[in-house]
Amino acid sequence: MTIPYKNSDKSKKEQVAGMFNNIAHSYDFLNHVLSLGIDTIWRNRAIREMRKTNPTVILDVATGTGDFAIAAAQKLKPQQIIGIDISRKMLEIGKRKILKKQLDSCITLDLGDCEALQFSNNYFDASTTGFGVRNFENLQKGLQEIVRVLKPGACAYILEFSKPRVFPIAQLYTLYFKYILPTIGRIFSKDTSAYTYLYDSVDAFPYGEAFAEEARNAGFSDTKCIPLSFGITTLYVCRK
Image (cartoon, rainbow, N blue to C red; front, top):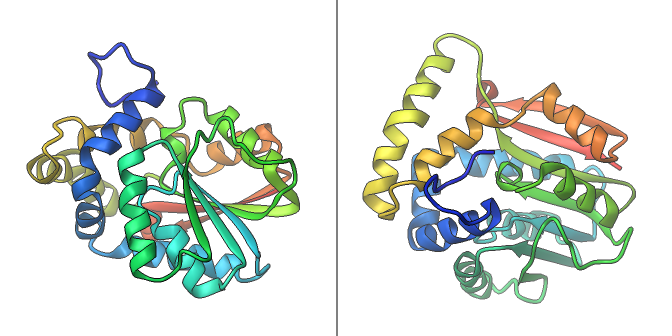
């Protein structure tokens, strides 16, 4: 299991919450700058897929500072989006952003554990997760909970980093993620482990067909894998 702080005796869940609390103040800046703004394009691609079913009640798992929820609210105009995360400080920033954009009548952010969702079975029309599933302490348990709260036929739209295989993208990707990004991240976030963990967690995470198999094992009936930006990221559309 990949964890942020190798010398800590805390669980992965506790470490991930602590890590995001530590970097919350610089997260949005680093997220957008270090991805060169492409993260917005990835979320918009996922939302185009969501538009095919026009979900009205959406769960945003590992919402962080709410970027996925905000984009979905602005573009899909659903009745309700509930975002959950284990990082209190990330949620605080997200709530301020939502108020500023006057989306608080649509979006609610709450502290919550993806592996023990406090919602009824078959409740949501769709779920989203942007770069959060690799942080689950128990991937199967987290996916099973998402399956449980989705309505039959509903989809989970999951964005997650993957590993490009085409030369020279694969080599440039490794150079950037393993060396350049952690160095910049340490300077701005003041957390020496957070952006090293980013590379390690992506490197260890099952992607493509391996993740599709994890989704099927969790109870999804079908998973479509859509590589984005030469395979740097993959959009998984997992149908219950």
